[in-house]
Length: 408
Image 1 (cartoon, rainbow, N blue to C red):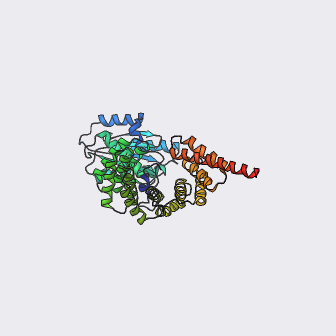
Image 2 (image 1 turned 60 degrees about the vertical axis):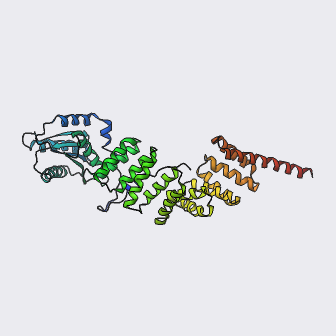
Image 3 (image 1 turned 180 degrees about the horizontal axis):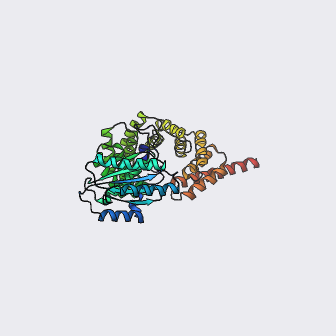
């Protein structure tokens, strides 16, 4: 079985205690604009960099109209933005730009306190909502913020609206550590692991005890091959919450890749003790117990994995191998038969199925076909080669026996 890390979204896509609505990932990520550098993004970034901001502070907000908004509604929204900015003195208190046909970015700086700034921003949202009868989504970021440049604060607002999108329209989200977790997860999806790691690390500066961030960081280290850092991240997360199942699973998987089977089994058994119906936990635990030849201990975990995910052939294939070791060809044949139906190109399942039929001396020509196919799919595998030889020898012996009986 090829080791793989579980998705961090398993954690993040949980119902949030602060909302009765289920959290759903957005179809579009505004943070992608930071890396794509669209014309609208670049235009606003340049305006922001060159703007004369006397008090060296500003608030940046990205606002999106609901997808149901018509073209006429979008045009009216632009008018509301123009009117709102015109009402702010001589139009030197802020800037704004259209990002796409239903999203806007704005920056303003003439305010005394953050409370006053948010009051102004809420007044704009209220005007748009009332005038256009459409819901809004908003992400907010502040300057100064840590050591962020103006451009980075603009990027923070884009990440904040991605965060808001998980809660749905009508929500406003201020940039925080979870915003960085979401941004990192998006980069992970795009296989930009190095930048994702940077996002998770920045997130941990803001939220140093956030287990999701630690788990995400550990997974990213794992897939890039930095296994010791991965293990350290998972161990730190477990110090905060020793019962976090996916961290236990990921730590067990890391130990497996580091060839520390005893520790891997230790952590996976802890995870199993908390919840015995997690597919990844049961499959990996069953596999590791099989590897150290604890067959009776492995079978219940593999059976559970097969029940939880009946579309996966892997658990059935390993069960088939155990039955072969136990000299139980009938059970092996049943397990391999289902595994091959689920994945007809699994060389291990084909080879095991061929051996099970050979042990029973039944359907030997079919067994030979399967054995040959397994070797064709994995020509370097010595076990599959040896099984093919055994099937061929058994078939030849069976033909000799049949011929002798006919002569008699």
